[in-house]
Image (cartoon, rainbow, N blue to C red; front, top):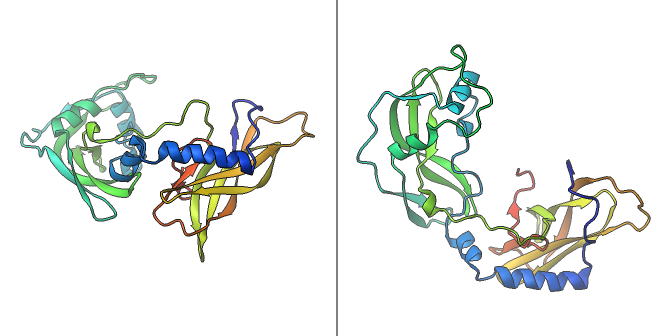
Length: 279
């Protein structure tokens, strides 16, 4: 994978001594913070609750997407008036959270609005009314900081469309904001995974510049977190550096198996998600 960089410059990555100072700062700032508590115990969604269009339910005919985008909705059924006010979210560790839900009417009002920017207006032969003929409360999968969970969702039946229009029913007030990096911090380690047969090793996917030389990976450990870094330094002989970012993988050895500790990137100071092939 090759991505455009904002510039060819930037700081050279720190060596071991500088890394430990930075990692200690990252660990101290994260441990016990509001972001830490929300990540471990709250509801932090790692994807948009309700992406524009019909992205949760597979391939959709072009006319449906166009009609949806233009807000060509028609309510041909009564929406339930006795919607539950709370619903259960069951976490992978077995715990259960009761979260507030939006009503079916509120969900319909939100997704039936036309998009803010409409480039392709609705010509008569290319748009059709999207007629809602029924709705029921079901569940969909959602990626969160605590793993993949099933969450309540409204399933709207649309005449002439095989797929249902799905709208996550969890009230946004129950969802904690995903933590943001401190201004100026740069993500370096993008993802990690465990190494089969080697419980004390992590495989890291990281980004580096075209003129960087890699000098290994570092890990700083506490009882709660593991802060990781890839030592990369700009080549002194490079006069012209292409503005590209490459990715590669590297292993780092821990003092003990990761267990339930979080992995933090020393550059961004944020949790690194498990799964090298994630997007």
